[in-house]
Amino acid sequence: MHNKTLTELRKALHQREYSSVELTRHFLERIERYGIQLNSFITVTTDIALAQAQIADKCLQSGNAGPLTGIPLTHKDIFCTNGVKTSCGSKMLDNFIAPYNATVVEKCQAAGMVMLGKTNMDEFAMGSSNETSFYGPVKNPWDTQTVPGGSSGGSTASVAAHLTPVATGTDTGGSIRQPAAFCGLTGLKPTYGLVSRYGMIAFASSLDQGGPIGHSAEDIALLLNVMAGFDKRDSTSLEHPQENYTTHLNDSIKGLKIGLPKEYFGEGLDAQVGKQLDVAIKELENAGATLHDIQLPHTYLAVPTYYIIAPAECSSNLSRFDGVRFGHRCDNPQDLMDLYKRSRAEGFGAEVKRRIMIGTYALSAGYYDAYYLKAQQIRRLISNDFTEAFKQVDMIAGPTTPTTAFKMGEKIDDPVTMYLNDIYTNAINLAGLPALSVPAGFVNQHPIGLHLIGNYLKESRLLNVAHQYQQCTDWHKATPPNFV
Image (cartoon, rainbow, N blue to C red; front, side, top):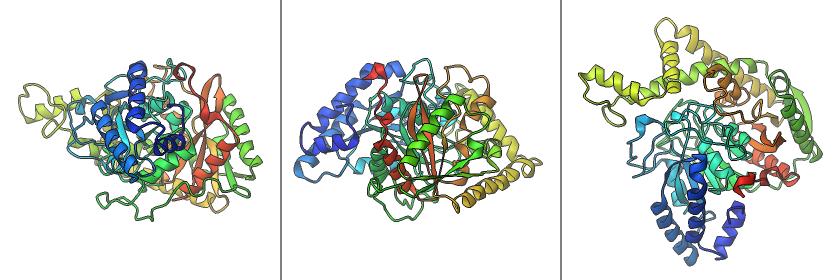
């Protein structure tokens, strides 16, 4: 059962080949068998999952089931879940039981989906390797000596190892797409505002975006149908008409203009990764797309711009964690200031503290204009680059990451090198565009990803291109040998 696609699982449930309870038990058994090995879960919600599966079976029996009724999934532990610990991978929230559901969780529950648990992640979504979690690093199912990517590493590892059919994740600077590439999965970062941020604990509010993670474009199109939609509780939510993202999956891509930025294929890209990507892009050309050289001249400024704006927003958002209302509180504080200082010092990890300090500095009097304001101006230039590019082409293609997954501990003590791992992804968040990573082969038995970038609200076209690519390749069907 665990090797079936979402479409196959849906068909089997509706034809009553097995029940949602049986399917849920099967995945819970796999989590029990492999979850500790990968450290991909923070919380496994066995009782909730079985109760939801029983409800789903009643809907299936009565003929009132929706497309994904009875399908199991996992949520990144950044989405609030009523009555269940929502930790954000941090000691600060190790004791926090969310009193309500995030909109994404609410929508999945309303669709009849079954929550298996909450997945491990970089602390407060700050990291590119899933090594900053208070609960320890997540391991990549393809090579447990390497990182799965971050910050949605627990979600991607659990899907890659077939511990869950699909998962939710969040993407602030590449945190869905980068781990999807490292784990051989398809992961989508939607247009900013397409998926509600209500109940999704904030890292950088102008950059954060929830999205689906699965094996194929068809799988994530089905999950996006559930996740997307306007939410009046989220002031940044887009009032965009509801779409069925599976409708155009089988459309031809003949005549599609794909741009290849020279900035994405030069210095910094591993030669073997680049060679494999050439093969992947050739497949799109064989399917009828035309290739065009383009320029994104401000690409080199994306990383420094991102690492001013994101920490600035994080320093503001994380100021609420003060040991007073919820979260970690130090023992026996001497006074209010001691409570604040020791609670935050004990509750936050090194990477979170680093970004809070950078952000506070960038926003401080005397430095605001020089750093934060300048970064916002450059952000507009980066966005304008994409606007100009989409006047020439329909879509942009390139590498998701400059290398394959790196060894655990290799970059954890070198933050700058770690940050450069998101060099191809964080400009997309700065511009608010949709983009996805699709499995594009292997280099030394480690997966790589093809990065497809679309214009605003062109998720259907992105998924169509990814699906057509997956009709002529089978990289998305590969399974890590130790998790068959």
